[in-house]
Length: 129
Image (cartoon, rainbow, N blue to C red; front, side, top):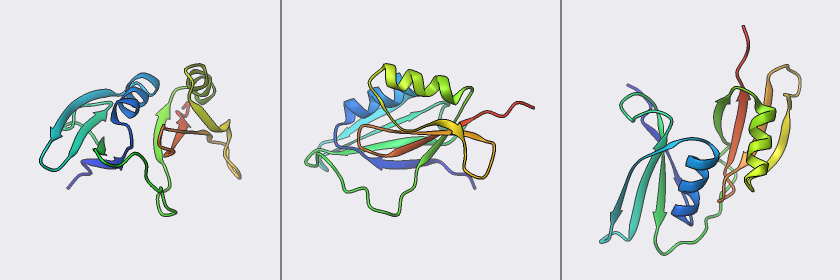
């Protein structure tokens, strides 16, 4: 078994694809409209689906926003430099909700940003060996 993808419902698909591809550096792997169901699926990721886990962005055509609820936590992305990643996000109009720095009670450098729908993404700085 392996984890294939994580699905997020998004209110504006083009805006979300732009965020994940332009700000986070993922690639748009595929996108398909389902007119009878009135929804579109787009898959983004750092690798092809056969090589790693990807993110499925689901856009229901009649829904502009979602209540994120209290059960979902965040996505985690490894970055070379969390400080530089935050600077890049801010320079491109993104939102940093926790600046880069050591995690509480530890030394791992982390930061949190939000995507256009409010989902949190944790940047975890790659450890130097």
